[in-house]
Length: 126
Image (cartoon, rainbow, N blue to C red; front, side):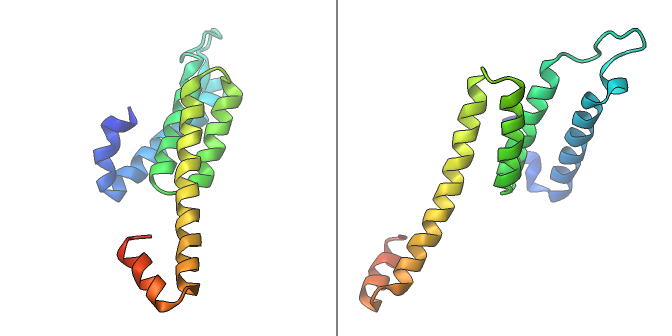
């Protein structure tokens, strides 16, 4: 579903609205009155919490809030530890975080190198 909604993220207001809707839906799923009707029958499937957490994790990862994305995917893993998609998403988040950390480290190393090496590394986008 995230892939289908991704074009909406070009508008920050739409991205914010999506986040608010998903967050309020997750909150309602967690409250006893929001999850069950008056007879105690579940209104939503048990997987609704799982997939909402999954979506919100993708949402925050896309927006660059990797720490919150990891927290949400961990909650989803605690909910359903057998779903492989959760571990794939977690790996993707870690990969993006590692790439940004490596870029900073390489950039610091390039700054410490002699000018000729720095120029060479910069010209090759290292």
